[in-house]
Image (cartoon, rainbow, N blue to C red):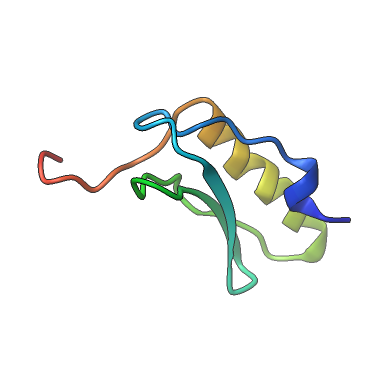
Length: 74
C-alpha cells in the first residue's frame, strides 16, 4: 500500500501551493507546503499498525487548515 496515493491533500491554506506528506525517520508524519514551508504538527506513531492512521491524521490537519508557518510576522 502506498500511503501517498491513498491520501488526498488540499492546497496550502496560505499560498495555494502543493502539500507534501512527509515521514520523519519512522516515528511521525506531517504535511508541509512545497512552496512556502507551512506545515502541520507531527502526528506520531509507535507501531506499524498506527502508521497509516498517523498519516491520515496529518492529512486531516492539513486539509482543515491547522498549520503553522514561520514568517517574520509570527
